[in-house]
Length: 93
Image (tube, rainbow, N blue to C red; front, side, top):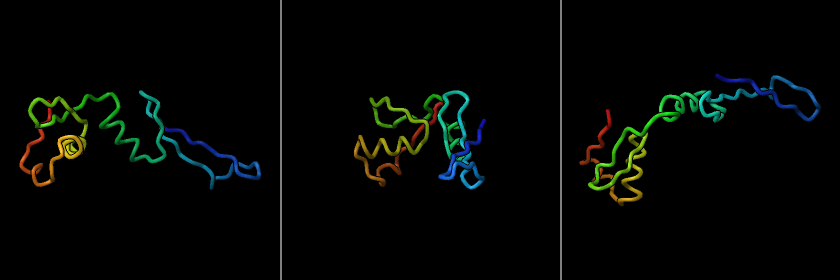
């Protein structure tokens, strides 16, 4: 679902050059200016449970994208990229 939002310019006119498409999620009502960002939100984030698990023992972190788990490993566990290449990030079914 998306709607077109016209913005009034300085002259009080609504011209096509000021027309902006806004994409809004029907579930959570978050809005996006780019169609691609909207589709990514709907496909991977909105209403979805995290699928990817942190491979470190006793860590319960889960991410919706594999990249989020990689960032978690670097940021929290202080792993280097070389160490991450040897780890398998598992996806929940």
